[in-house]
Image (cartoon, rainbow, N blue to C red; front, side, top):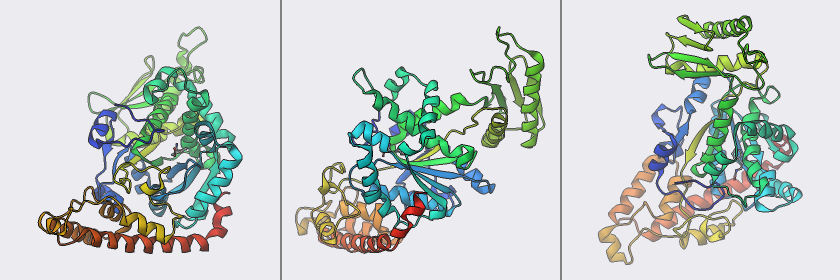
Length: 452
Ligand code: TRP
């Protein structure tokens, strides 16, 4: 099983994906003011979200990063990601949004000029209506932030063609621009941690499950740049290991002939020990020769905190000091015709620039979970799990869980008819859309603030 972030195929078995790729499931009850997406299991899995939540609880800064490919029309799936960014922003996060113009150029054959124009007219104008705070949001173009490309290049030292093949299924005829774009994207994801973009802090990337390969690649490369590995050990404590790399041999006490410079090694170990003490731990045992430090009074619960302190130390010694990015994963709403949603087939999805007539038409001809005849429907009831009108209420338009539950039960009981559930959806969708179009028009003057 593989996930291809560029293919349009949907993912079928979410549970299997979690197991195979080691994603953790999300418990909405552990989140501060969970949104309907969390409450309903639509955002269903994560990597290292605790790191972000711990930072928030400790009053430390944290950020959220998302990206958009400036091709195709903006649709409800994009709105879902911005809603998540806004939720994190309300919890205290800063927001960075990448316009992946280099990626679109590499994989969709668009010129950079076309990408820019398109990104602003189609996406940023709509984002302006979605309630992000422009003072805490920055939207940038990949092609105009050379540091993300440079970072992608540097991180690229920590992967190779075999890994790219294994993760993405690349092969001999894959263009090198295509190979490069996930590296640039890794640069996107990591660069907010650089001092000039906000400094060391957890960054969470809310994505569709199809984007997990990028997270796996990025997290893998980042962890390989870390100078101090923080891991749980067999006795329940934590072990810190020095990671010797091209750019830190001197600091780590390795001489040019590969022998250990004991004086320098002790120096770096002492620094690690004081960083650990600063983090509040005291039962520390070090083995300078093996480059290992055990902490007895720390456990896996303290891993993020220790990492945070050691990344700070790494920075002071000349390393990048990057945290692995966190991520959350959402499921996809079904396409409106019952199959997969595809932006190149307009009848399968709702675009944010659709007219009210078009929205109504799409919902009224959407795939239904109702029965073929009225009598049959009254007798057997409808199936909300495949019913597009119901699913769009669940994903996008009905915030109230009780109301949604009522609609669901009545539909299953056959009390609510296909035409009726569609009407509810039309009503809710057009109300939302009208409001969105108004907010969008009102907020056009914010666009330049977002782009700064
Ligand atoms: N690859 C993403 C897409 O296809 C766009 C993107 C670029 C992105 N950089 C990103 C997404 C960083 C999340 C984070 O839509």
